[in-house]
Image (cartoon, rainbow, N blue to C red):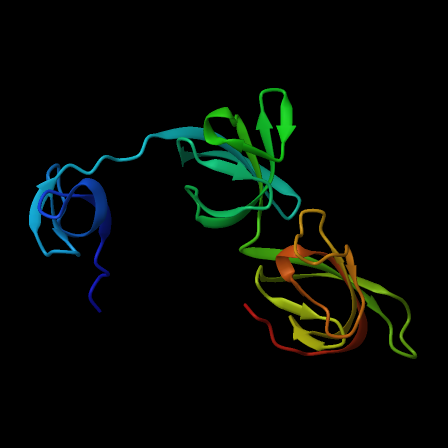
Length: 214
């Protein structure tokens, strides 16, 4: 499979010397060879890399946290709830911004230059706490934790067979940083939440011996 063609926005000396147009990158380098997608003119140009600032990042996952850093484009706005891919020495992690530290204060949004520390939570793969109510004849309520992809969907009223556990979802308590639901608890049949937004599931214990999504 061939690699996707890279495109950049630069001025074209043939048809648009005063404004940027989309160009195909033919040969990268200090003087990049590009071809205008409007008129087909091929020419060389210098591609300016955007300025960046380094921000400290605190990453939280399953009750533990570690510190790292990332480069953010200068002038870029950051906000709570946004998600981005963080390149760490251990792995590429999908994280969600939970707070921004600006000086001695916390802020819901700020430009990159003002941010001292980005506080985040891993949402690519998450642990979901589940409270299982017993069937008739079972002893007592159980509490378990399931590891699932962050975009895995839990729906009230539907049965799940995960990690040797089977249960029917009765209710979902959402995390404080979950957005787009309108409520902090879902308990109507058909209500759906992504695993990365779930603080705890409440469910009826069905049985065991099920498959795992991992």
